[in-house]
Image (cartoon, rainbow, N blue to C red; front, side):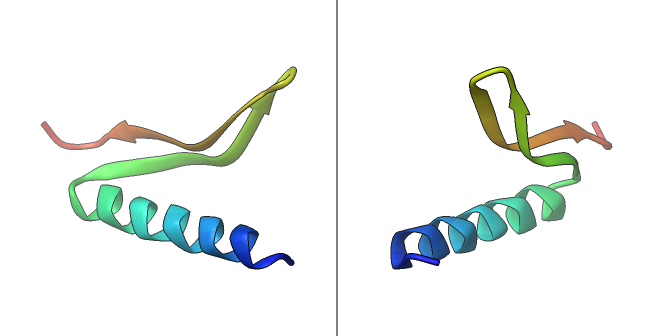
Length: 47
């Protein structure tokens, strides 16, 4: 894997950890639809 891809995966994991620590539930990682993609799809579990 190229260095920039490893950096991107590391950044996504940091973001996901942060969101989970704030009460968000990670629903999908690397979600795709047609030619679009989202790295993280999450929903709030606490208000």
